[in-house]
Amino acid sequence: MEGENKEFVPICGDLNIVYPTSGAAATSRYQAIKKKFDSLYGVAPLFYCRAPGRVNIIGEHIDYCGYGVLPMAIEQDIVIAVAPSHDGKIVLCNMDTKFKRYEVGTEDYNIDGKEWYHYFLCGYKGIVEHLDIKHPIGMNIVVDGNVPKNAGLSSSSAFVCCSGLATMHANGGKLTKIEIAEVCTKCERYIGTEGGGMDQACSFLAGFGTAKHIEFDPLRYKDITIPDGVVFVIANSLVEMNKSKTAGTHFNVRVVECRTAAQVLAKTKGIDWKSVRKLAQVQEKLDVTLEKMLEFVDEVLHNEPYTREEICKILEISDDELIKQCLSESTEHVSSFKLQDRARHVYSEAKRVLEFREVCERKPNNAIVCLGGLMNKSHDSCSFQYECSCDELDELVKCCRSAGALGSRLTGAGWGGCTVSMVPSSLLHDFLHKVQFEYYSKDPAKLAVINHSLFATSPGDGAAIITSE
Ligand code: NG1
Ligand code: MG
Image (cartoon, rainbow, N blue to C red):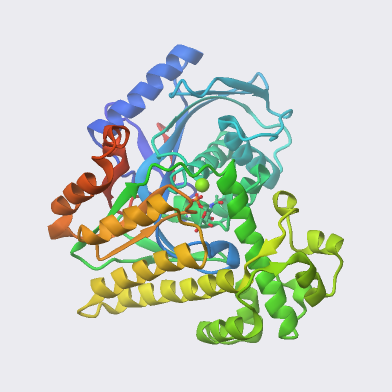
């Protein structure tokens, strides 16, 4: 970007954005995008947007239950170069030729699959509808992404956010970061995931140098400074967590188990259960602590899986109504629900997030040991209670702990993808060496991709529009 007199503008003035990856690497990346753009469309892009992936430090599978999470943005991101056009078309090309060119009318498109361009269309549709744009402008586009895919680092949400941002800017729209994060959370549901909003919020609200405690309903956040002397290391298990396939079903089943647990708890406690969708709402309505909720979970719910018939009986509804009130299209046929384990995970994880934040703010002498302990407990709860880990992730976590991590856990949805480990800075070199030896070296295929699979990371900046104006 240097030499082209580009500057990085805030999205809409509610917070300043400083672009994190300046210097040679960024320059050559943007130049390569521009060159491809020129050769495809015969003009230069009018502007670029970028939106980062994220790593969740703690607070897994609780955003969609209404509880706060503690992620940070990573440096890896999706970049979209845009030139508006007047031919009523969106043309999408990708720097990675594996993803084929796609062309569609600005007012004549369907999100009827999970091809790469459908993620673009999610962000596009969300913004067009939210801003009520009657005749959206055409766009010629080149996309470039370097967030590892299907790895729990939120590459898909980064793409949806980037597309929403590009569509907003191309059509002269203005939204605050909070507003656009909320729109992008809702619109990812067009593609069938019922995520809770952590990824989109982190992509827009992230700030250089700090993690964020992000809370929902209403969306809000606070900077969290991690104590000195540690670094976070991401390690990819290289088991692909493909949300559009099995993991997608697992994910939506968990969403539904949590919703059902909330409704059964609510009904048993005499709350109007039909108004309850999230476990956090039960706590709010009962006005009790998380410890108390954990006691209720053990009192009210049994450990054996619930059948559909049993849930219908408790809620006093028919199977048809169960489908309407609790299930979703992709989970219509689920027959067994582990309500106690799932609810236990959620309430205990929500508590760990608050403890993590409290330790970061209070900074006791043993802060980093406490934080590591919370991360370890989080992983164990994900693995045993939430059953969203897999053998390779459990093995990698073990490896990272014995290589010197104070805490190590799966990050993101799980069922494959990455771990995040908190490592004393002084041990980093040794840690990387040991994990490479223990997890990657034995398999040449794993070793071949180690540079993108095992790396230290620090909190990166949030999404931005980059223009030359
Ligand atoms: P990833 O890691 O992108 O699959 C998903 C959800 C989050 C959150 C985590 C689990 C989406 C877009 N993202 O993240 O909202 O629920 O799982 O903590 O569905
Ligand atoms: Mg994702």
